[in-house]
Every structure is written in structure tokens, then in C-alpha cells.
Length: 325
Image (cartoon, rainbow, N blue to C red; front, side, top):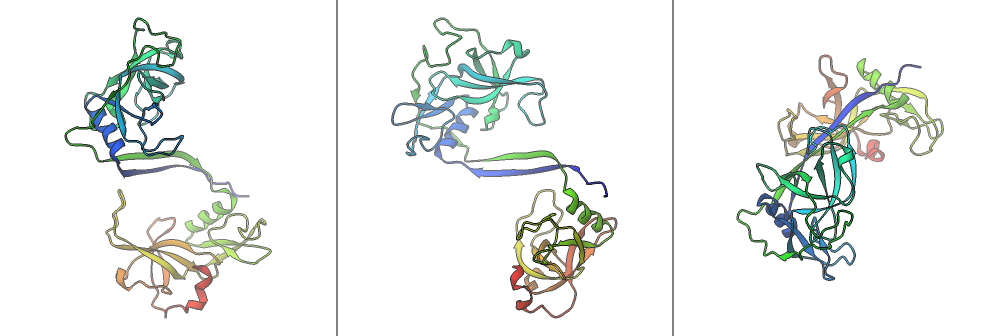
């Protein structure tokens, strides 16, 4: 049995979203060193604010200002900060109920060690030196000496001033954000896909045949998704195939050196009962069509086809690939 592969993988992309009136006011407020919450019809103040009451599902828009000080309701110590986290040295993740709020805000607490953190302790916002209208405008929370009349053991609103109404009037409101998303993990493709990847290194494509329905699945999964039985019989397919469906991509992806527009499609390799996906090139994008016969184009040293190009054969009849759409 050959060694099963494994490798570290990183999934990273910028997530762009627009903001409604509540989130827009909240993030713009952080830029101006103001923390806003939203008040529900029964008088609760939610921080961070949401657009709909989580209990009644009512739309809520009544913004109020709360204090930049608060009480830790629970916490966990982070011994090894990761890339992109608020602080580069060990810190505590804390839920902080700001004075005037009924819910807690998750953020980092700068503390010398876990022995300095406790539930019920008082903290305050440390503002970032440069602010742009993002949650990172709160650099972190920092320790605050207990003011008179406020119990360090009480996570409630005792002694806190009532939140003040806010008219959400700021200059140059933040209307959208770009939030980077990143996931680091180690992936092992398993026995079946290890064999598939190793075959690609020899410029071959192999699948596995189900012993029950006799379908050949590419890439192989190690089991038939239809019958649920294990598969082990390897079958070499392709290298040519038929384009079944496709799309024209008009938005350029970050860090992808391919000019738009380009075509991405599902390709049913000859002998396979499942289509795989790949880029279609060496043909004008507006001439790509269902049924187009294609073949792989390999790059020097590449472990998988760079793209697929037309073979020059007549188009496949629809009846030949309709079950693979």
C-alpha cells in the first residue's frame, strides 16, 4: 500500500459585504471612538447591535450609546496568538458586558498572564491609534481599577448609567467592509485520492469502479456515492473528454494570473461516469459550447492539467453526455 498523502493547505479570500443602517452606524461609531448598541422594544440593549431582535425577530433601529467600560462575564487564555489576531503576545479572549448593555462583546484583553484575569473584573476599551470603521478600531480591552460602587464580582448593569439615545449622524459613514477570511489546516486525501494524485504526476487520470453499479467515479472517493459500497478497482480514463456545462468568468480573482473573461466547465472524461471541472482555453470564450470535445494541456513539471483545449473532433451528441450534466 503506497503512503497516503497529506499536506498543509491554506484557504484564504477577502469577503466583501455591504452594511445596513445599524452595522454602518456601529462601525462608523467605532471610528469616532463611540460604542453604539441597539435597544429592543422590551428595553434590552444589545451590543454589538443587530438589525432584528433575536427573541421576537422584530426589526430594530433604535441606536443608543453605551460606555467604553465594562465587566468581564467569561474568558479564556490564549497562550499562542495566531496570525491576524488582535495581539502578538499571549492574551485573554473575553466577553465584556459594557456598562449600559445587556449582552456581551467578544474581544481581546491585554493582561500580563492568566492569573491577572477573572470573571467580574472591570475593563475598558483601548482604542487603536488609526481607525477606519472596523471592529479592529478597538485594539483590545485593558484592565481598569474598580470604580466606587461597582462590584468586581457582579457581571450585571448595577451602577451603570442608562445608555443615551443616538441619532447615528456621522460624517462619511462606513457603508461596506472587506473582511479577510483564512483557514489553515492539514489535508489528507485518503487512499483513493492519493492514487488519483500520484497518477496525475504521470499525466494519467484514474478513477475507481463501483462493484455494484459499475460506474467509474473520477476523482475517486473510495466508496460509491450511489450504492454506498467500497471501491478499489482502478480504471484509467480519458485523457480526452466532453464539455458538459460551463460558465464564463468575468471577475478577476486575487492572486490568479488569468485574464478575464475565461471559461470554467465540467468535463466528462471518456470512460468516466462523473464530470470533473477544469478551465477551457485555446478557443474564444464566445465559441465554447456544450458537447465540445477537449483534451488536457499539461505544464512542464505540473501535477495536473493547466487547462483543456478543443481536440478538433466533432461535438459529442447530447444523448451521450446528458446523464453527466
